[in-house]
Image (cartoon, rainbow over all chains, first blue to last red; front, side, top):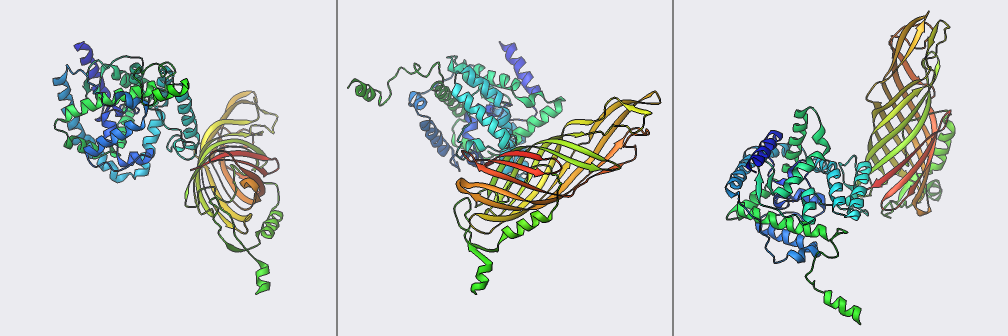
Length: 314
Length: 282
């Protein structure tokens, strides 16, 4: 097992050129909304997604997390008040990797993103982010199909077609706005395994990719194969595109990570717990859309269920 | 004063938001009709011109389109050649107040030139006569302005320029006095510029019909790799230019569901050029 992880670590280090704090930033894994992605989402990104802006502190962020979860309906009720734990047998290693990622962020990624921020205007950066997200469509589609969420797959395909044709190849996102309102489906392969009942296993912090687990590592590996820019050759152009994507993405959420860690007593623990909870909620939300699981995945009665039964009886 | 009023039209013009612009203008119908009749046929142009009034929100906004057009034209050198092209392109535009719009297009186009390799000399033979090349990129920049005359009628003007980024190349084997050769024809620096006037009438259900005259100029360089008697092109650069410089066009712009619009357009030439575009308004 150790050899396996050592091999994977070396492989990822060879693949990577620049740090990205969160698992969200893995190539093709934009949809894996890990803690850091959600917590570090910038006002710019929020604006792009049509969501509320200005998250100033970690408390505000936590509140926003909760608001977001409440909006998700059924899935939230299942995990509300429920603490999701994740085993952490590799804590010394994970803490070292957390520190490594932290330093990479502050010493390399952030200065690069700040410089980039000055040169490239925000609308252009949002368009670039839209474009790379657009390219991750194969991964999202496969995940949705594997989750038996065919309505989601159709919606995602509709988004892809509309944004390709009328969004200038994905630079713009007309499908999400106006009268169309086709929202991006946050689906990934690790989440798909979760929908089928596969557990996290244990917590692991990958260098560059950030918080993950053996199950969610499949997202990093699988999505890389399903992400078209991964096939750009020669390899240094491929890595250059990857680095560009990471810097662009980071430029849209400078300051969010700082706010998060400044509010936590132990940022490592805060991130770990939030990561586990977020993924659990995410998977429950996906289950409610799956044709295979939506009818029988929640044995606990929901508020209003009894009333519905009473109504049917009468 | 009354006489002056009779010569000018005081009428509101409904734009996309229903706001009336209230312009006093000279009746554009007369102007457009006269110009349509003044310009002579035949003519040709690449890409759609579209209705003169931008579909963008009056407060200012984007609209994007995907379009297809098929066009034919006659270019002249020492003799005339018929050029046929299919265009597929994506357009992004920004417009405001229903009065003006700037737009850019990026697309691909093929090229077919009838009889480009035809030999006029019996000693020179080629295995085929037509030049054919597949999809190459082109880009277009344009602008249009609109002047509402009444609530339903308005007149506009547009100008757009197109440049084909790549050379179009085709080669054909042949023989001269029994000796084989390979003739490689390159069409370089293909560009054109078009401008015109555009009369628009708005019908019920926000259907718009439009028509107008236009003028254009198109130019390219042709270079053949070999010099053989009877062939139209030589290793020296030969300028290809459009034979006719003017034309007329007309089309209809129909609202579809959920912010989309369909534009169908025809451009009159020695042959009819046609095109269609589906536009999404942000």
